[in-house]
Length: 123
Picture 1: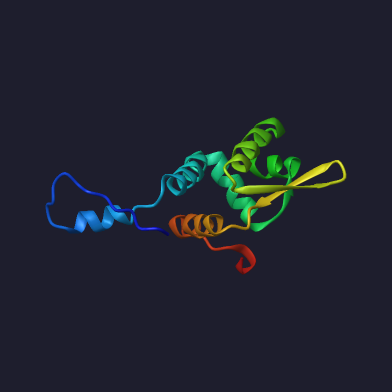
Picture 2 (picture 1 turned 30 degrees about the horizontal axis):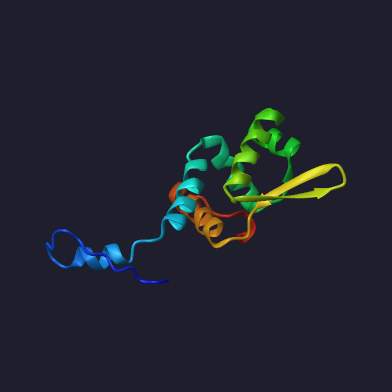
C-alpha cells in the first residue's frame, strides 16, 4: 500500500495526519461497505451464514429459510454481485456457496462471534 501525502489545513496534534495518510483507498472501503450493506438484511445474512457452511441450491435454501424460491434468488443475486457468494452449475441446477475470500472469512467469523454461535463441524 502506497502512503499518501496529505496536507491538512490545521495541525492539531500530528496524529491525525498519520492516521489519514494510512486511510484505506476508496475502492477498498467501497467493497467493504457493499458487503456490509448486503449483510444488513436479515434474510441475506441468514442465507450468507448458511452458505458459509455448505453449498446449496435455491430450492433447499428456500426450504431452510422459509422463503419462496424467487425471494431467495433475488437475495442470491445481490450477495453474488457483492462478491460474497459464488455459483456453480451442475446440469440444470445452480449451487451456491460462500466465496473463498479473506473478507468473506472475516465476515463469517464476525457474524458467529457477535451471534455467539459456533460453526457446525468446525468450519
